[in-house]
Image 1 (spheres, rainbow, N blue to C red):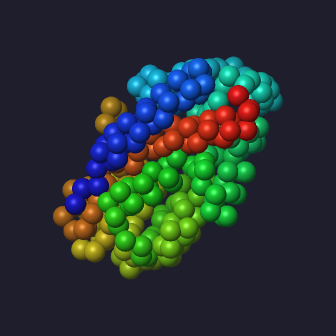
Image 2: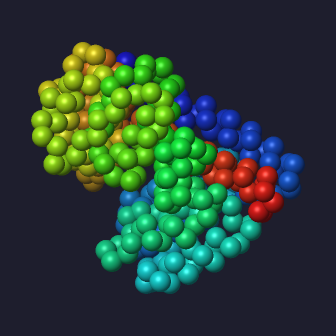
Length: 281
């Protein structure tokens, strides 16, 4: 079965639009998400523009602040300034940042309730206590797919240990009673481990890296990878090879990515509700 992320994203968008409309009517505000981009990374620009378009569909304001020539300290000062503005309800730093910048140092200047990407150390730490009000959007998207298609709790192998995907996703899955194995570049016998698990989540960063030798007929495969080759996008999973063997598979595009884009706004909504409930906006 193909695990279609578009269906999930569309349903989420409808619910989000309704909630944002209700908030705008009740509080007479137009919520604002501030995007911050440093440099001219093409993929980063594409992602930022897609968020702006998605914001229009949801009836909220998404603005992009783009810096070409700026230092780490100046970036942090701008982040602090945006964070202190009550009319700005969410902030997201577009990645990757150029060489020489420290993403975590910058993002930690965002209040946890304005951290729409779920990347502050505070929100990451909250996952350990099952507080998932705001969670890294990509990790949340994987869980959304598993839950939507009712993939049962079992053994899950994640090939990634980053703070963006692997580590937070491991906690989200543990919170739902999955048994989790984290694999990475130093792991021995990854292929064997992957085949022994019910679920394989690939975030390797290499196009078509995972083939049918990593899966069995019982495998559910979630492809987190986004790799560009010209105008074409490839996942980390060789779809044609794995589709013939695996029980379930998510496509690229149309899988994790489109759900992630929606989950950023779910984080934004959860943070906005916190601000309204605590009179912070």
